[in-house]
Image (cartoon, rainbow over the protein chains, first blue to last red):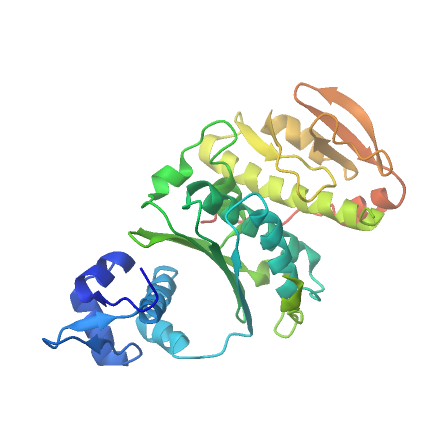
Amino acid sequence: MTPDALLEIGSVAREIGVTPSTLRSWERRYGVVEPHRGNRGERLYDAGQIEVLRRIQTDIRLGARAAAAHEAAAGRPERQSIRVELPPGSEAPRLARLAVDAILASTPEQRFAFFARLVAVELVSNAVLHGRPADPIALEIRLDLQTARLRVHNTGRTLSLRQLRTRSGRRGWGLEIVDALASSWTIESGPLGTTVTVCLPATDAGFTDGDWGTPRPEAV
Amino acid sequence: MSPSVSRRAENESCFRVLNERLEARALSRDGPETVFLAVCECAREECRERIQLPVADYELVRSRPRAFIVVGGHRDPEIERVVLHADGYEVVEKVGEAGLVAERESAREPVQGPRG
């Protein structure tokens, strides 16, 4: 999808895994995403709006109520966030590690940072494996009050959780690690690519509000 | 420049915490006779090697605060010595400052339900 392309409601609904009526209901109730209108009055969504809807749906899948997910999407500030695009090759895992360091640079909780790096590397390695070789991999890290949320997106064919979990030789074991470290995680896969979102509970590491480090985005 | 001794020792302790969680998941899934796939507990954070071993064997190692399992050849001679050559892995024991870090970090996490 090019940045200025518009998708109709049915395609968007399939892409993020809801029904068109759910999208209309969200629009009516919360008004966070107001689609463009075509010549016949039909709803059309741009890439940015699809991204917002995907975030909302991810939050809901991770246990948030719809209202809270929309409130977050409408701009409730995260404590900190970083988004980087990684080249889809062997360098990507190392750069993912640097991205985690950039946002957790001064945290006193080294174990939490270690686990975050580990999860980021596993997710990005999977994205390199399954993504389209020419397209970058997007890594986003958001720190909220109680969690770090890592989100990795790659283009390429639609993937199922079962395919991701298929173990062959050394492949497929990374998700076992993610399972062990995450409080929850989701996968959304459609024609536009695959997004895996993982929540790491900061409370596991003994974090309290105010413990997050100062980000150094220039490190990536 | 290689990371400091204490940083390398902390890395190994983090891998050990991860292995405890992997072990707990295997135990709840397959029972106490199970074999599970642990991560190498060496000092290199980038290491992605895996070690297959019975839970009972891992528990023997884990019961010693300074002992860790590593893939053969992954020992860091500056901070540890090999105390056992096993099938597919080695057991190393931390010495000096690394040993103190290992002891400090050896408390096990409270038992939790399965994640994910």
